[in-house]
Image 1 (cartoon, rainbow, N blue to C red):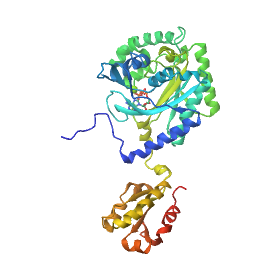
Image 2: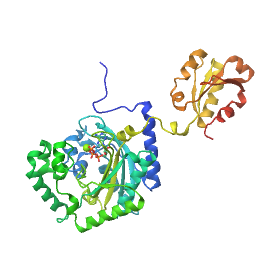
Image 3: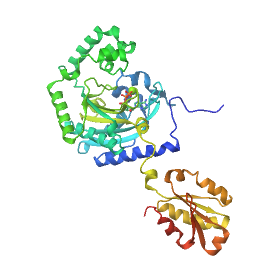
Image 4: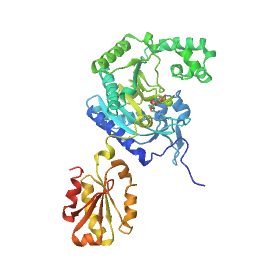
Length: 431
Ligand code: ATP
Ligand code: MG
Protein backbone atom coordinates (compact mmCIF):
# COMPACT_ATOMS: atom_id res chain seq x y z
CA UNK A 1 0.00 0.00 0.00
CA UNK A 2 1.26 3.49 -0.78
CA UNK A 3 1.63 5.98 2.02
CA UNK A 4 -0.43 9.14 1.82
CA UNK A 5 -0.07 12.50 3.55
CA UNK A 6 -1.56 12.91 7.03
CA UNK A 7 -5.22 14.06 7.08
CA UNK A 8 -5.59 17.83 6.99
CA UNK A 9 -2.02 18.31 5.77
CA UNK A 10 -1.25 19.41 2.21
CA UNK A 11 1.50 19.50 -0.33
CA UNK A 12 1.93 22.78 -2.13
CA UNK A 13 2.54 21.56 -5.65
CA UNK A 14 4.79 23.29 -8.21
CA UNK A 15 1.94 25.00 -10.07
CA UNK A 16 0.71 26.65 -6.85
CA UNK A 17 4.14 27.69 -5.66
CA UNK A 18 4.12 30.87 -7.64
CA UNK A 19 1.20 32.37 -5.71
CA UNK A 20 2.88 31.48 -2.44
CA UNK A 21 6.05 33.20 -3.51
CA UNK A 22 4.11 36.26 -4.58
CA UNK A 23 2.32 36.45 -1.24
CA UNK A 24 5.58 36.11 0.66
CA UNK A 25 7.47 38.57 -1.51
CA UNK A 26 4.79 41.25 -1.25
CA UNK A 27 4.53 40.63 2.50
CA UNK A 28 8.27 41.21 2.91
CA UNK A 29 8.16 44.29 0.69
CA UNK A 30 5.29 45.87 2.58
CA UNK A 31 6.40 44.93 6.10
CA UNK A 32 9.97 46.08 5.37
CA UNK A 33 8.63 49.41 4.14
CA UNK A 34 7.00 49.98 7.54
CA UNK A 35 10.28 49.23 9.31
CA UNK A 36 9.55 45.65 10.39
CA UNK A 37 12.38 43.12 10.61
CA UNK A 38 12.13 39.43 9.93
CA UNK A 39 12.69 36.95 12.73
CA UNK A 40 12.76 33.17 12.15
CA UNK A 41 11.48 31.02 14.94
CA UNK A 42 11.44 27.32 15.81
CA UNK A 43 8.29 25.42 14.94
CA UNK A 44 8.14 23.71 18.29
CA UNK A 45 8.36 25.06 21.81
CA UNK A 46 7.88 23.91 25.37
CA UNK A 47 4.20 23.10 25.87
CA UNK A 48 3.85 25.40 28.86
CA UNK A 49 4.65 28.43 26.71
CA UNK A 50 1.39 27.98 24.80
CA UNK A 51 -0.63 27.04 27.84
CA UNK A 52 0.46 30.28 29.49
CA UNK A 53 0.06 32.66 26.55
CA UNK A 54 -2.92 31.35 24.60
CA UNK A 55 -4.85 30.43 27.74
CA UNK A 56 -5.84 27.15 29.38
CA UNK A 57 -9.52 27.66 28.63
CA UNK A 58 -9.16 28.19 24.87
CA UNK A 59 -10.06 25.66 22.18
CA UNK A 60 -6.49 25.69 20.96
CA UNK A 61 -4.99 24.60 24.27
CA UNK A 62 -7.85 22.32 25.26
CA UNK A 63 -8.14 20.29 22.10
CA UNK A 64 -6.10 21.49 19.15
CA UNK A 65 -2.44 21.23 20.10
CA UNK A 66 0.01 18.71 18.71
CA UNK A 67 1.73 17.91 21.96
CA UNK A 68 4.17 15.07 22.55
CA UNK A 69 6.96 13.97 24.81
CA UNK A 70 10.38 14.01 23.21
CA UNK A 71 12.89 11.28 23.92
CA UNK A 72 14.24 13.18 26.88
CA UNK A 73 10.79 13.24 28.49
CA UNK A 74 10.09 16.96 27.91
CA UNK A 75 6.63 17.97 26.74
CA UNK A 76 6.88 19.94 23.51
CA UNK A 77 4.21 21.29 21.16
CA UNK A 78 4.15 22.12 17.47
CA UNK A 79 3.31 25.81 17.43
CA UNK A 80 -0.40 26.53 16.85
CA UNK A 81 0.44 30.22 16.29
CA UNK A 82 3.55 32.39 16.23
CA UNK A 83 3.00 35.12 18.82
CA UNK A 84 3.96 32.98 21.82
CA UNK A 85 7.30 31.91 20.34
CA UNK A 86 8.05 35.40 19.13
CA UNK A 87 7.48 36.88 22.58
CA UNK A 88 9.59 34.14 24.10
CA UNK A 89 12.44 35.11 21.76
CA UNK A 90 11.88 38.82 22.50
CA UNK A 91 12.33 38.19 26.21
CA UNK A 92 15.04 35.53 25.94
CA UNK A 93 17.31 37.67 23.74
CA UNK A 94 16.59 40.96 25.48
CA UNK A 95 15.31 42.56 22.28
CA UNK A 96 13.42 45.04 24.47
CA UNK A 97 16.59 47.07 25.11
CA UNK A 98 16.28 48.61 21.64
CA UNK A 99 14.20 51.74 20.95
CA UNK A 100 10.51 50.89 20.92
CA UNK A 101 8.36 49.82 19.31
CA UNK A 102 10.26 46.72 18.26
CA UNK A 103 8.68 45.65 14.98
CA UNK A 104 9.02 42.03 13.91
CA UNK A 105 7.50 39.59 11.46
CA UNK A 106 7.82 35.92 10.73
CA UNK A 107 6.19 33.39 8.43
CA UNK A 108 5.78 29.64 8.32
CA UNK A 109 3.66 26.60 9.17
CA UNK A 110 1.34 26.35 12.20
CA UNK A 111 -0.30 23.20 13.53
CA UNK A 112 -3.77 22.71 14.99
CA UNK A 113 -5.71 19.52 15.42
CA UNK A 114 -8.95 20.85 13.93
CA UNK A 115 -11.61 19.16 11.84
CA UNK A 116 -10.23 19.45 8.30
CA UNK A 117 -12.50 21.18 5.78
CA UNK A 118 -12.18 23.76 3.00
CA UNK A 119 -9.96 26.56 4.30
CA UNK A 120 -9.22 24.73 7.55
CA UNK A 121 -6.22 22.45 7.82
CA UNK A 122 -4.06 20.79 10.44
CA UNK A 123 -0.88 22.23 9.04
CA UNK A 124 -1.42 25.71 7.63
CA UNK A 125 0.70 28.80 7.15
CA UNK A 126 0.65 32.24 8.62
CA UNK A 127 2.37 35.54 8.13
CA UNK A 128 2.75 36.91 11.62
CA UNK A 129 3.52 40.51 12.53
CA UNK A 130 4.07 42.00 15.99
CA UNK A 131 4.95 45.49 17.30
CA UNK A 132 6.14 45.52 20.89
CA UNK A 133 6.67 48.18 23.51
CA UNK A 134 4.31 50.95 22.40
CA UNK A 135 0.68 51.40 23.43
CA UNK A 136 -0.24 54.42 21.37
CA UNK A 137 -3.39 54.11 19.26
CA UNK A 138 -1.50 55.39 16.22
CA UNK A 139 0.40 52.10 16.21
CA UNK A 140 -2.87 50.14 16.15
CA UNK A 141 -4.03 52.17 13.18
CA UNK A 142 -0.70 51.90 11.38
CA UNK A 143 -0.70 48.15 11.76
CA UNK A 144 -4.20 47.76 10.37
CA UNK A 145 -3.29 50.12 7.52
CA UNK A 146 -0.22 48.01 6.76
CA UNK A 147 -2.31 44.87 6.62
CA UNK A 148 -4.71 46.55 4.20
CA UNK A 149 -1.77 47.77 2.11
CA UNK A 150 -0.51 44.18 1.86
CA UNK A 151 -3.88 43.12 0.45
CA UNK A 152 -4.01 46.16 -1.81
CA UNK A 153 -0.69 45.13 -3.35
CA UNK A 154 -2.16 41.68 -3.96
CA UNK A 155 -5.15 43.37 -5.59
CA UNK A 156 -7.47 41.85 -2.98
CA UNK A 157 -8.26 44.82 -0.74
CA UNK A 158 -11.54 45.62 -2.51
CA UNK A 159 -12.75 42.08 -1.82
CA UNK A 160 -12.17 42.31 1.92
CA UNK A 161 -13.77 44.09 4.80
CA UNK A 162 -11.89 45.44 7.81
CA UNK A 163 -13.80 44.74 11.02
CA UNK A 164 -12.61 46.24 14.26
CA UNK A 165 -13.72 46.17 17.86
CA UNK A 166 -12.40 46.92 21.31
CA UNK A 167 -12.27 44.19 23.92
CA UNK A 168 -11.59 46.64 26.74
CA UNK A 169 -9.22 45.62 29.50
CA UNK A 170 -9.31 43.78 32.83
CA UNK A 171 -9.99 46.83 35.03
CA UNK A 172 -13.06 45.93 37.14
CA UNK A 173 -15.20 48.68 35.59
CA UNK A 174 -14.39 47.53 32.04
CA UNK A 175 -14.47 43.99 30.61
CA UNK A 176 -15.19 42.21 33.93
CA UNK A 177 -18.34 44.31 34.32
CA UNK A 178 -19.33 43.37 30.78
CA UNK A 179 -18.52 39.71 31.34
CA UNK A 180 -20.93 39.60 34.28
CA UNK A 181 -23.67 41.14 32.14
CA UNK A 182 -22.95 38.78 29.27
CA UNK A 183 -23.00 35.67 31.46
CA UNK A 184 -26.32 36.77 32.92
CA UNK A 185 -27.76 37.20 29.41
CA UNK A 186 -26.32 33.90 28.13
CA UNK A 187 -27.61 31.94 31.11
CA UNK A 188 -31.07 33.40 30.60
CA UNK A 189 -31.00 32.27 26.95
CA UNK A 190 -29.02 29.06 27.39
CA UNK A 191 -31.80 26.82 26.08
CA UNK A 192 -31.56 28.51 22.67
CA UNK A 193 -27.78 28.03 22.38
CA UNK A 194 -25.89 25.05 20.96
CA UNK A 195 -24.30 22.59 23.33
CA UNK A 196 -20.80 23.94 22.78
CA UNK A 197 -21.92 27.48 23.60
CA UNK A 198 -23.78 26.35 26.71
CA UNK A 199 -20.64 24.67 27.89
CA UNK A 200 -18.61 27.82 27.26
CA UNK A 201 -20.84 30.18 29.23
CA UNK A 202 -18.91 29.68 32.45
CA UNK A 203 -15.54 28.67 31.00
CA UNK A 204 -14.99 31.32 28.31
CA UNK A 205 -18.14 33.45 27.88
CA UNK A 206 -16.70 36.00 25.43
CA UNK A 207 -15.83 33.22 23.05
CA UNK A 208 -19.52 32.31 22.81
CA UNK A 209 -19.97 35.52 20.79
CA UNK A 210 -17.85 33.95 18.06
CA UNK A 211 -20.22 31.02 17.36
CA UNK A 212 -21.32 30.92 13.74
CA UNK A 213 -24.37 28.63 14.05
CA UNK A 214 -27.57 30.40 12.92
CA UNK A 215 -29.56 29.40 16.01
CA UNK A 216 -26.86 30.88 18.26
CA UNK A 217 -26.45 33.97 16.05
CA UNK A 218 -30.08 34.86 16.70
CA UNK A 219 -29.39 34.98 20.42
CA UNK A 220 -25.92 36.49 20.19
CA UNK A 221 -26.85 39.37 17.92
CA UNK A 222 -29.04 40.67 20.75
CA UNK A 223 -26.45 40.15 23.47
CA UNK A 224 -25.14 43.21 25.31
CA UNK A 225 -22.28 44.84 23.35
CA UNK A 226 -18.87 45.30 24.91
CA UNK A 227 -18.61 48.73 23.37
CA UNK A 228 -21.25 50.00 25.81
CA UNK A 229 -19.17 48.88 28.79
CA UNK A 230 -15.71 50.19 27.93
CA UNK A 231 -13.93 52.22 30.61
CA UNK A 232 -12.97 55.78 29.71
CA UNK A 233 -9.36 54.89 28.80
CA UNK A 234 -10.34 52.02 26.54
CA UNK A 235 -13.10 54.04 24.89
CA UNK A 236 -10.60 56.86 24.21
CA UNK A 237 -8.05 54.44 22.79
CA UNK A 238 -10.65 52.95 20.48
CA UNK A 239 -11.85 56.37 19.37
CA UNK A 240 -8.29 57.47 18.57
CA UNK A 241 -7.57 54.28 16.64
CA UNK A 242 -10.59 54.95 14.47
CA UNK A 243 -9.62 58.60 13.95
CA UNK A 244 -6.15 57.60 12.76
CA UNK A 245 -7.61 54.95 10.49
CA UNK A 246 -9.84 57.57 8.95
CA UNK A 247 -6.92 59.98 8.60
CA UNK A 248 -4.96 57.23 6.79
CA UNK A 249 -7.94 56.51 4.55
CA UNK A 250 -8.62 52.96 5.69
CA UNK A 251 -12.31 52.06 5.41
CA UNK A 252 -13.50 49.85 8.26
CA UNK A 253 -16.60 48.80 10.13
CA UNK A 254 -17.05 48.37 13.87
CA UNK A 255 -18.21 44.84 14.71
CA UNK A 256 -19.41 45.04 18.31
CA UNK A 257 -19.37 41.25 18.69
CA UNK A 258 -15.97 40.55 17.19
CA UNK A 259 -13.92 38.55 19.67
CA UNK A 260 -10.85 36.43 19.07
CA UNK A 261 -10.03 32.85 19.91
CA UNK A 262 -7.08 33.58 22.13
CA UNK A 263 -7.35 34.73 25.73
CA UNK A 264 -4.66 37.34 25.68
CA UNK A 265 -6.33 39.97 23.52
CA UNK A 266 -7.45 43.31 24.95
CA UNK A 267 -8.50 46.69 23.52
CA UNK A 268 -8.14 46.82 19.73
CA UNK A 269 -9.05 43.63 17.85
CA UNK A 270 -9.55 43.32 14.14
CA UNK A 271 -10.27 40.86 11.41
CA UNK A 272 -10.21 40.98 7.63
CA UNK A 273 -13.09 39.01 6.21
CA UNK A 274 -14.47 38.09 2.82
CA UNK A 275 -17.79 36.76 1.68
CA UNK A 276 -16.06 34.51 -0.87
CA UNK A 277 -14.74 31.69 1.30
CA UNK A 278 -17.92 30.39 2.90
CA UNK A 279 -17.72 29.66 6.61
CA UNK A 280 -13.96 30.17 6.72
CA UNK A 281 -14.34 33.86 6.03
CA UNK A 282 -11.43 35.36 8.00
CA UNK A 283 -8.17 35.81 6.11
CA UNK A 284 -6.39 37.68 8.88
CA UNK A 285 -6.93 38.61 12.48
CA UNK A 286 -5.11 40.32 15.26
CA UNK A 287 -5.20 42.62 18.20
CA UNK A 288 -3.54 44.16 21.18
CA UNK A 289 -2.20 42.13 24.09
CA UNK A 290 -0.73 44.55 26.63
CA UNK A 291 0.28 42.60 29.73
CA UNK A 292 1.15 39.35 28.00
CA UNK A 293 4.90 39.99 27.83
CA UNK A 294 4.97 40.64 31.56
CA UNK A 295 2.96 37.48 32.17
CA UNK A 296 5.71 35.57 30.38
CA UNK A 297 8.34 36.99 32.71
CA UNK A 298 9.41 39.89 30.49
CA UNK A 299 9.22 43.66 30.95
CA UNK A 300 5.78 45.33 31.20
CA UNK A 301 5.77 46.05 27.47
CA UNK A 302 2.50 46.34 25.59
CA UNK A 303 2.12 44.59 22.24
CA UNK A 304 -0.05 44.31 19.19
CA UNK A 305 0.03 41.93 16.25
CA UNK A 306 -1.82 40.03 13.57
CA UNK A 307 -1.64 36.80 11.62
CA UNK A 308 -2.63 36.23 7.99
CA UNK A 309 -3.86 32.79 6.91
CA UNK A 310 -1.83 32.19 3.75
CA UNK A 311 -3.92 29.30 2.38
CA UNK A 312 -7.02 31.47 2.43
CA UNK A 313 -5.19 34.34 0.72
CA UNK A 314 -3.81 32.04 -1.97
CA UNK A 315 -7.32 30.70 -2.54
CA UNK A 316 -8.51 34.24 -3.33
CA UNK A 317 -5.75 34.95 -5.84
CA UNK A 318 -6.51 34.67 -9.55
CA UNK A 319 -4.51 32.09 -11.48
CA UNK A 320 -2.09 34.19 -13.50
CA UNK A 321 0.33 36.26 -11.50
CA UNK A 322 1.55 39.40 -13.27
CA UNK A 323 5.18 38.80 -12.35
CA UNK A 324 5.71 35.17 -13.30
CA UNK A 325 8.92 33.63 -12.08
CA UNK A 326 10.09 36.67 -10.20
CA UNK A 327 11.04 38.78 -13.18
CA UNK A 328 12.71 36.08 -15.26
CA UNK A 329 11.22 36.59 -18.65
CA UNK A 330 12.76 34.48 -21.36
CA UNK A 331 13.06 30.73 -21.37
CA UNK A 332 15.79 29.08 -23.40
CA UNK A 333 16.08 25.43 -24.26
CA UNK A 334 19.55 24.49 -25.44
CA UNK A 335 19.42 21.35 -27.55
CA UNK A 336 22.79 19.78 -28.22
CA UNK A 337 22.85 16.91 -30.70
CA UNK A 338 25.77 14.87 -29.41
CA UNK A 339 28.55 15.03 -26.89
CA UNK A 340 30.73 17.82 -28.33
CA UNK A 341 27.80 20.24 -28.83
CA UNK A 342 26.71 19.52 -25.26
CA UNK A 343 30.12 20.49 -23.89
CA UNK A 344 30.06 23.67 -25.95
CA UNK A 345 26.61 24.65 -24.64
CA UNK A 346 27.16 23.96 -20.93
CA UNK A 347 29.11 27.17 -20.17
CA UNK A 348 26.72 29.17 -22.35
CA UNK A 349 23.80 27.87 -20.25
CA UNK A 350 25.40 29.17 -17.08
CA UNK A 351 26.15 32.55 -18.58
CA UNK A 352 22.53 32.93 -19.58
CA UNK A 353 21.21 31.82 -16.18
CA UNK A 354 23.40 34.29 -14.38
CA UNK A 355 21.78 37.00 -16.52
CA UNK A 356 18.31 36.02 -15.43
CA UNK A 357 17.14 33.68 -18.17
CA UNK A 358 15.54 30.33 -17.40
CA UNK A 359 17.63 27.72 -19.16
CA UNK A 360 17.12 24.05 -19.83
CA UNK A 361 19.83 21.93 -21.45
CA UNK A 362 19.20 18.62 -23.22
CA UNK A 363 21.68 15.85 -22.58
CA UNK A 364 22.58 15.41 -26.21
CA UNK A 365 21.28 11.89 -26.76
CA UNK A 366 17.64 12.49 -27.75
CA UNK A 367 16.42 13.01 -31.29
CA UNK A 368 15.73 16.64 -32.23
CA UNK A 369 12.02 15.96 -32.82
CA UNK A 370 11.61 14.48 -29.33
CA UNK A 371 13.39 17.41 -27.76
CA UNK A 372 11.23 19.96 -29.55
CA UNK A 373 8.13 18.11 -28.44
CA UNK A 374 9.38 18.15 -24.86
CA UNK A 375 10.25 21.84 -25.05
CA UNK A 376 6.64 22.94 -25.27
CA UNK A 377 5.77 20.99 -22.16
CA UNK A 378 8.46 22.44 -19.92
CA UNK A 379 7.05 24.44 -17.00
CA UNK A 380 8.97 27.50 -18.15
CA UNK A 381 7.30 27.23 -21.57
CA UNK A 382 3.89 27.26 -19.92
CA UNK A 383 4.70 30.13 -17.61
CA UNK A 384 6.91 32.36 -19.66
CA UNK A 385 5.05 31.92 -22.89
CA UNK A 386 7.98 32.42 -25.22
CA UNK A 387 10.66 29.81 -25.40
CA UNK A 388 13.67 29.98 -27.66
CA UNK A 389 15.31 26.73 -28.67
CA UNK A 390 18.97 26.70 -29.60
CA UNK A 391 19.90 23.74 -31.74
CA UNK A 392 23.53 22.77 -32.01
CA UNK A 393 24.53 19.71 -34.02
CA UNK A 394 28.02 18.63 -35.09
CA UNK A 395 27.69 20.42 -38.46
CA UNK A 396 26.68 23.74 -36.89
CA UNK A 397 29.45 23.36 -34.34
CA UNK A 398 32.00 22.83 -37.12
CA UNK A 399 30.78 26.05 -38.77
CA UNK A 400 30.80 27.96 -35.47
CA UNK A 401 27.05 28.60 -35.63
CA UNK A 402 23.85 27.64 -33.86
CA UNK A 403 20.22 27.64 -34.90
CA UNK A 404 17.89 29.80 -32.80
CA UNK A 405 14.27 28.83 -33.18
CA UNK A 406 11.28 30.54 -31.65
CA UNK A 407 9.13 27.63 -30.64
CA UNK A 408 5.71 29.12 -30.95
CA UNK A 409 6.07 30.47 -34.48
CA UNK A 410 8.67 27.97 -35.65
CA UNK A 411 10.74 30.75 -37.25
CA UNK A 412 14.43 30.11 -37.04
CA UNK A 413 17.70 31.73 -37.97
CA UNK A 414 21.39 31.02 -37.80
CA UNK A 415 23.50 32.89 -35.29
CA UNK A 416 27.30 32.77 -34.83
CA UNK A 417 28.17 30.96 -31.59
CA UNK A 418 30.32 33.89 -30.51
CA UNK A 419 27.28 36.19 -30.51
CA UNK A 420 24.75 33.67 -29.17
CA UNK A 421 24.64 34.89 -25.56
CA UNK A 422 24.13 38.52 -26.56
CA UNK A 423 21.50 37.56 -29.09
CA UNK A 424 19.48 35.65 -26.48
CA UNK A 425 19.93 38.34 -23.83
CA UNK A 426 18.65 40.94 -26.24
CA UNK A 427 15.39 39.01 -26.25
CA UNK A 428 14.69 40.09 -22.71
CA UNK A 429 16.76 38.68 -19.86
CA UNK A 430 17.59 40.88 -16.91
CA UNK A 431 20.78 42.90 -17.37
P1 ATP B 1 -11.00 30.92 12.71
O1 ATP B 1 -12.04 31.77 13.31
O2 ATP B 1 -11.09 30.82 11.19
O3 ATP B 1 -10.82 29.59 13.36
P2 ATP B 1 -8.86 31.86 14.35
O4 ATP B 1 -9.50 32.93 15.13
O5 ATP B 1 -8.65 30.53 14.95
O6 ATP B 1 -9.63 31.69 12.94
P3 ATP B 1 -6.23 32.99 14.31
O7 ATP B 1 -5.70 32.10 15.32
O8 ATP B 1 -6.41 34.41 14.63
O9 ATP B 1 -7.54 32.39 13.68
O10 ATP B 1 -5.34 32.90 12.98
C1 ATP B 1 -5.30 33.94 12.01
C2 ATP B 1 -5.69 33.44 10.64
O11 ATP B 1 -5.11 32.17 10.37
C3 ATP B 1 -7.17 33.18 10.47
O12 ATP B 1 -7.84 34.36 10.17
C4 ATP B 1 -7.20 32.21 9.31
O13 ATP B 1 -7.10 32.90 8.08
C5 ATP B 1 -5.95 31.41 9.52
N1 ATP B 1 -6.24 30.09 10.13
C6 ATP B 1 -6.53 29.82 11.43
N2 ATP B 1 -6.72 28.51 11.62
C7 ATP B 1 -6.55 27.91 10.41
C8 ATP B 1 -6.60 26.56 9.93
N3 ATP B 1 -6.83 25.54 10.75
N4 ATP B 1 -6.38 26.34 8.60
C9 ATP B 1 -6.12 27.36 7.75
N5 ATP B 1 -6.04 28.64 8.14
C10 ATP B 1 -6.25 28.93 9.44
MG1 MG C 1 -9.77 28.80 15.02
